[in-house]
Image (cartoon, rainbow, N blue to C red; front, side, top):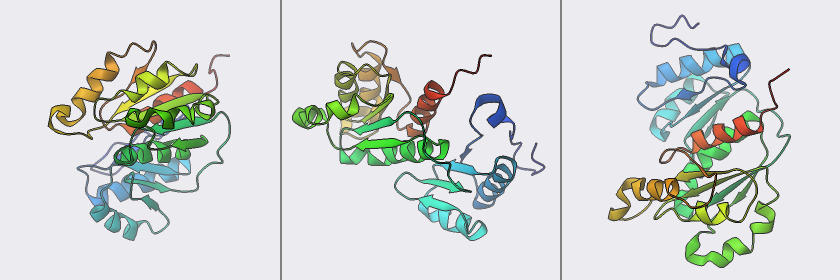
Length: 220
């Protein structure tokens, strides 16, 4: 357990669940974020944080000069990344506006040691773009599909591949998209059987779902 007055950390999570505790940086101060990353890196060899805005990242980096900040996905990592080994994850985005959420997923997967192949801006508005890449996407062990607007792309991909598909609704869209709620409901009501859906803009959650799918069987 951490002795910091502001946080009680869980350094045993890596051994217990196969992935370490991740620092959710939103609403935390730069001091709290740096303290938590430093303590987790000491316990596990490396540490990772999500939802770190650029203005706060500079203050965190001043305390942790060895940390790496990825601005598009707003993630920060401390300590070396493991080598990317094992089955591949395909990361598919409907549009360029979905890239920040996809970048969060990609950085999380990299931190957890999974190879990722990205397929960006191939949404249903130009469905031929998906058809041109679908054979490559089918080779992945898990497919993460990130989409806003009406959120149709995961249903289409889900009907074309055999691998598990994790759908991520984004808050991209005009007024009637209701900040991603329309995409979320569309994905939850998908007729593509077995589609997994995470919360709005939750690239991190999609990456952890993929990690759980790809972990070796823990049974004896």
